[in-house]
Image 1 (cartoon, rainbow, N blue to C red):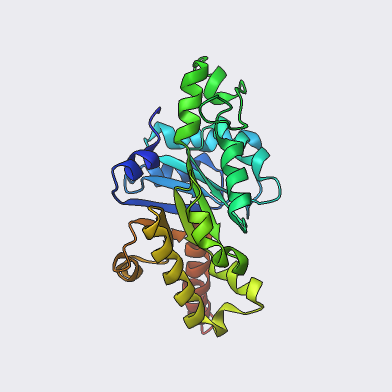
Image 2 (cartoon, rainbow, N blue to C red):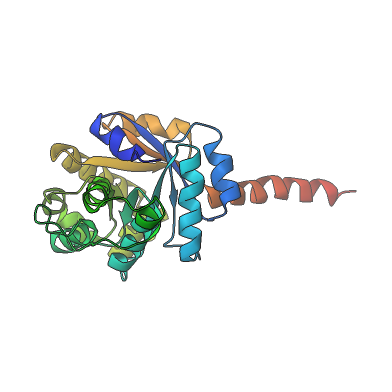
Length: 263
């Protein structure tokens, strides 16, 4: 699979749909891809354990079914992790915790090719997407690096204050609001400040669209998409592997426990 699925959709100014995976198991990646419903899937590496072999296998499974891939990475080692993920085959990076345009600019530079045209800091590592292809040329590799989709979480109060500058940085393709981290940075619990953080989310969506940056929104179900579609959102992440399982285990498990306890 040579085409960056998400990049193509963004270039066409059309919609995209993903879901979040907590596991790198190729069994689940293939099961998801076989539905044919998802343009790409996001591995939430910020939350879950993994090895570098896992990253390669995750991408291989997605590619075999013409499904794209995104990885959500920690801030502290984001240059190293993003480069390893891209070399493994990931087509999009979701950068967490960047606070200002300077940090966003660095993240983009670290994942852009080190060519005279781009001036990035990513070279020609003989990883899966070079050596095993086999041996794509340097400029083919540089072209793929440029096409990587770069998404940035806007999840700190300071990042919200810097949203205009962040969305003005060349190379920012998508932004996504993170209510949990945002509320934590304000000293809040989300349950006590729903109206406040929803207002902030609407604000950053408006700013992103004004700057030609695509807002990406996570939704728990299809019904929730209507609210965001009315705000101009086209990029969606539908639910979450762990959330779906936890909800079923809690609700249906609780019901069955109550039934059999009466036997």
